[in-house]
Structure formats: structure tokens, C-alpha cells
Length: 457
Ligand code: ZN
Image (cartoon, rainbow, N blue to C red; front, side, top):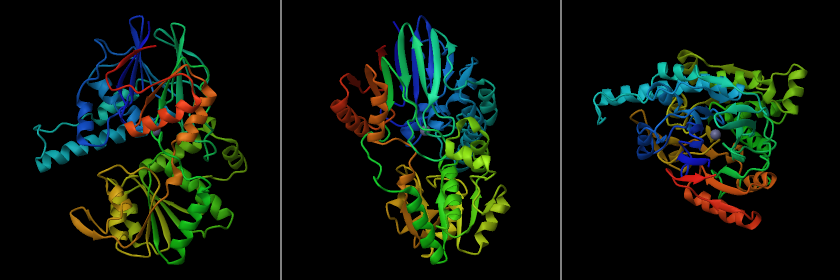
């Protein structure tokens, strides 16, 4: 009898880890880091309950750290040395993201030691860049749609339409078929292909990030973006976009170039100020197997889809600082997406005090981040120990979400026709709302597992 144990990413959107056991062997699907409040991050220091022995193989749905960021710890501290399989694009993205995550862990530990606020002396990083490199050596790319052997059965990856390389995982073991949704993306977003249906699952592990929410209907992302850019251009301001390096940055660049071409926005200087965003954009361009028809058509006629006319890349710190003196109007895209660190914080400090400027958030803003305070309407914020007045316009463009909303999740499940569904990767409110919505259309059993639960498949 196969079993599934929920080790993380159950009633929270981070720390995704699902252990499938069959015949004394096990496969771990996703190996995510817990993120957010301190109690949650603390869980990263506990070894996951693998029932005695390490997994025999790991499969990763996509490169986001909440699905992959525990890999260095698993490899370096727990001694995991078997293969880790994911799509080719995910393997390349992890090559950028895991070392970056490690540097962040090292900086956090260093800072704690300098300030002396850690309970542990000296404070240690959860993992180092060398640990990340060790994890990267275990990665093996798997093509979409082809079965490959896993301990106790076989597995296959299908497109999830969420970010470059994102997949849902199908595993067959002991005559049962399980589908792990990963993060379900959206239909008709630029560059990457749409989500594919997961057919005929006995058990579907379904993410519920936006289980209780609907994205604004009848809102065209291009119209929203054009309106925002034109407003800033007219009043001679600078538009700062705190954007996640993978996904949102590329979508904004893609849409800006198109809007310029159609004459819907002026050709402003656009700065991409984040080495990781620059690398990720290159991977988005290079992985042709991920591209949808529109993207392929652009490439065929020699257009660079991510290049607005006056794009400038800022790799070095000096190039980043030079943006402080740019003649407005201009657009600055910089990480991190929640403004809780990274270069964008410097741009915010510089631009927030002036009313002609605009800050456009394009993704979820977690509690306790600078982004959340600004979106909630703070008139004063503290940045690097200084008080900063907020006179710039602050907008939330949630039309750019990379997650399926409730209707899109129902659509995806409708194509899947599973026997049973376990809702994961969602706060309880979202999971319950989605469970209620599923009750209307889905006849089978819906489960809301907790961390540590084991289920017979
Ligand atoms: Zn994701």
C-alpha cells in the first residue's frame, strides 16, 4: 500500500514537501523552504520526518524557493545524494536561484552576528553557497511528457503554466496514479504555454493559494499597465516596479515592448536593475521548448521580446546607483518583489518622497514586508534606519498574478476528473473556500491535510 506524508506546504503556502512511500522506497515531491514569519522559518531547522531513511529520489515542480529552497540543506546537512529531477528550464533557473538563496541565508546570519540578536552564537546560515552548489550537482533534467523510472514506479512532468519550467508531476505506483499540481498557472499569459490538464488521477494534490479569491474579471493587463505608465510619463515621474526576478519581471518587459510598438505608451528609459532578473530573462529567452506561439512568432522575425526600445541593464552596484540621477520620466524594475530587501529598497528611498513618482507592486505582499506597509497606505516608512515620507502614488497591479484563481483551479480540476483531492499550499481560509466551491462540481472526497499527516493512496 502506497502512502503519502505531508511534510510541508499544507495549511501554508511555503515549505512544500510531499513524501510518497511504496514498497519500502520513497520519492519526495518538492523540497521547499518555509518562508514568512519567524515560527515558520524556524521549521527549516528541524529535519523533515522521512520515516528513518532519506528519500530515494526527489522531483521538483518548479524553481520557486518555497518548492525548491530546502534542497541545499537536504544535500549538505542530511547527506542526500540521489538524483533530483525537474524540467530543463527549472534546472537552469535553480542554478541562479539556489546560490542566491544561500547568499541571503549567509547575509542574514552575518547580520545577526553583527547585531548580536541571535539566540545562537555564532548564528549559522541555514546553508551556504557551497551547499547550494552541492545540491545543483544532483539535478538531472527530464523532458516534458516522457515517463521516467522512479523508485516504486514511474513519473512524468506536464506543463503548469506558472513560471518558466513549471510542471505538475504525475506518479504511478502500485497501480495508482497521483498528480502533484505544484503551482497552477494561468491561461493566456505571455511567453509560456498554458497549463495542461492532469488526466485520470486517483489522488490529486491541489494547490489552493488563491482558493478563495477571484482575479479581477474583465481587466486587461495591457490596459492597466499602459494607463499606469502614461500617468507617470505625463507628470514627469519615475515608476518603480518591485518585481520578483522570475516571472513578473519578464512579463512586464514583454508587455512594455508590445505597448511601445503599438504606440500605446511612450518609449521611456527602462532599467532592469537586478543581476538575477537579468539572468532569468536570458533563460526565459533561451528555453524555446517553453515558448507559446506568440513568443515563437516574435523570435522568428528577429524581435527581442523582452527589450523595450530604451532598455538598460544594471548589473553592477555602480550602474544601479547611477539610476538615482536619471532624467525622468523613466521606469525602474528591481527586486525584491515585496521590497523586503534588495536594490529596490534604495530606489524606494529615493523616489517615495515625491508625488510625481509611482510605485507599482505586481505580486502578493506578505505581512510584515515594506511592500505590505506601502500597499496598506503607510504615509511614513522606515528605510535603512531613516524615516521616509510617502508622497509617491502606490498602486497594486494584482492583474499580474501567476497563480490560478478559484475559477481557474476549478477549470483545471474539471479537466482532470480525479477520484480524490487533497488541498495543499493554502491558508485554511483559501482551502475551505476552495473545498466549498469544489463541492458544487466535484463528486469525490476533498481532504484538508495537516503537516505530518499520512494518507493511504
Ligand atoms: Zn510558484
